[in-house]
Image (cartoon, rainbow, N blue to C red):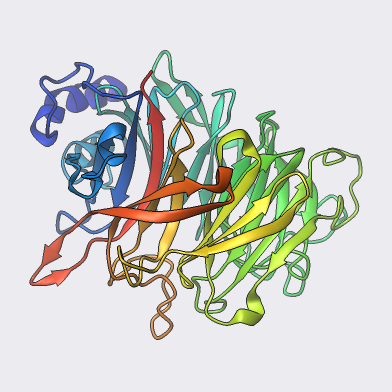
Length: 437
C-alpha cells in the first residue's frame, strides 16, 4: 500500500514542477539524442529541497550554449512528497546523480540525509524513495541493473538496493549490508584500523563491468574491493592508507584496469590529487594478500600544494581519461593503455577566472564534456579557510574536446543561480548525460 501511495504522489504532483513538460506521465520531448542532468545542492525549502536542471543536448553545442534553457525541477516539491510517503522522512541536499544502463531511471542520493530517490527519466516522475539511514553520499547502479550500491558515509555502512527498473521495484536488501567500522578483512585485520584505515566512511562505490566488484574509497584513506553480489557483501581485496590516499570519488574502468583517484575536501585532508590504476585480473584471487594486486600510481600532485582531484571521465573510445582538479582549475589527461599522464590543460580563462570543475559527463558523440562548476558558497567537500571547492561561476561548464581526447577548452558556461538574501548560494555538483535515442 505504501508503494501505491508513493507512485500516486509522484504522478499527481510532477506537472506543477516541470518547465516545458506538457502533461504528467507523458514522455518529455527531447532533441539530438541526449540531455544533460545537473543538480544544484542549495536548499529550495526551509528543510532542504535542491533543484534539478535538465538541458537538451544540442542547445549546449552551439554558439548560444551559455543561454541554453533547461527544464527546472524543484526537488523540495514532488521528490520530498514521495520520500515522505515512502519513508516518513524528508530528504536534504541532493548530491550525486547517476543513470542506469537502460537510461530509463535517474538515481539521486541526498548527502545530508539517507535518501536515495529513483526518478523515471522520460517523464521526470519520482517513483520510489529509500532511506538507508544516516547519510547517502553516493549511489551507483550496477551495469546489469540488478542492484545499486550505496555509500552510507557517516553511518560507515556499504548498502545494497535491489532494483527492477521494468517493474518499478526497489528494495533495500538488509542482509547485504557491510559494516565498514566493525568488519574484518580477508587477512584478519580490522577493516577500520588507526594505522591501516583510520576512518572507514565510504565515499564512492565504483562498480566494474561485471557488476560484481565494487571499489569502495574511504574518507581516511585505504580502499576495499567488495563482491557486491554476495550477502552480506564480501571483501575480496584490501588496501591501506599508505597505498591509497583519502577521499577518492572519481572512478572509471578502461583497458583492463579500474582507475580510482584520491582527493581533498575534509578537514583532516583538505588538499589531495592522486590517481591509481588497479588491475582487474587477479582481483578475485583467494586469498588476496593486503595491497594486492598492486595498483599503478599514475600520478601524485600532492607536492603542488593547492590541488583537489574529484571528477573523472573517459573520452570517446576510452583512449584517454580526464581527471578534474577543482582547486587548481585544471584537467589532467591520462592514456588508459599505458596508465600514464599525456598532458594537462587549465580551464581558467575568458569564460571564468575560477571555474572549480568538479564532476563530469560526456556527450554521446564525444565532442563535448560537461562539468559541474562549483559556487562561491559550496555546501559540501569544502574546508573553510582553505576554499578547495570554491568557484566564481556556478553552472554547467561546456568543454570542447580537442586533440582526439587529449585536451579540451572551456567553451561556455550555462549559469545556474540561486540567490538568497542577496547572496549567491547555487552549488552544482551531481551531473549525468542521459541518452534519449
